[in-house]
Image 1 (cartoon, one colour):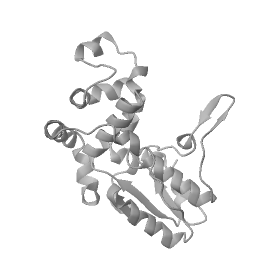
Image 2 (cartoon, rainbow, N blue to C red):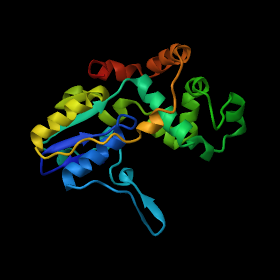
Image 3 (tube, helix red, strand yellow):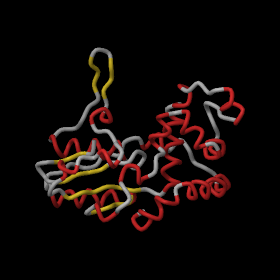
Length: 216
């Protein structure tokens, strides 16, 4: 679900790998007045993403946003996919949970792919893993294809400006806590890796740049 702040008539629509965890926690605190803490119940862990999911745009409920100001945050495709690689593949070892078929192995798919391998075979890794697929869906999957739907669209480099905007609506809004930063630091590609892989990602996500490029 999107985060609908009924009291403040404000809706935030999230996109995975665009400061998503930090912003979901932030808006939880805006709404409730206290920070979210993950917890366990009957041995199962519950985190912020169990309560504030990032659904397909068509599943967002218009009635919940009636009269609301609607905001979101976007990120350029290359940095977003690199973030997915750093957090899901390198830090969290997501692909260790996947049992590749013989055909996938023949393609060169492995549990600990290099950045080159991950980008080259991204569509195949997306097929093999829901986690990878979910975190690499196009921006338009989550945000729709009409930027005019939103009152404000911020770049991930404008998070402080977004916080200042929210503060004009919620004067006692908290500070934003930057979460998952350590996982993002686990990958520092060389210029050669950037030169090889960035054009491939930009080509694959050209529609995102066409729709939201002026905000990135």
